[in-house]
Image (cartoon, rainbow, N blue to C red; front, side):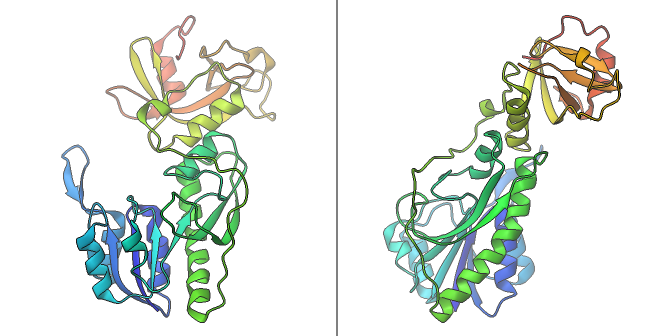
Length: 316
């Protein structure tokens, strides 16, 4: 089949590469325009645009699929559209342009977590399982019938970024299977069942960590907003990025982080057994790496030793 593949971030690249290696023909790749990146704000193509260039595929760059973009897709005479995190909704005219419409790879077990940030919201919620789901795109947000939903276990220590990267590889294989099935006429899709939940795009404020919650919830929150928008708290007037944290391990030696004596008030800091602990509502967490405002990322215990006496110092 002739395909048009739409996507923008790194999570869409495995699907593009997998389809480029298949027997199907990619007529064009649709992605968003370059955006300013880095401290120097250099205009940079999307990861999908860069991958398409490496593969020698034609690229259409557009912030939205308007009448002109729809016309250009129609001229390609494609059989199917495949979309993975393109970053804009498609209107009815665009949806109807490929002969078989569009299929979408979504990183949740639909109808759970419809929206822009399904992996982040699932990790933030402490979920242990999700799915890579391929469904028929319709005008309503992530509401179309499902072809395949491939279960995926969320590692208890993985960040949202790590989960998404792993799911992108799994999802690429699921997409390839669905595209093959559509091509040979064996594909079937079923309507979504259950009460939908939403996964709105995260904001900077979503990264603010509340240590008054239990340790499991705080840990999940930090993992869920890593690497974007990034976890943070304040020590007095200083904003501190929380780059990595983990639960206290039961195997820790006496006097170390596992010592019951290490119980701390929410947000309170203490160094024990060479580790920096921060209190929560029930048990402390280990802060492994931090980045205070205006400084580089560093070992959290080393940062704490530089603060001197920790009594009375609280992350909030």
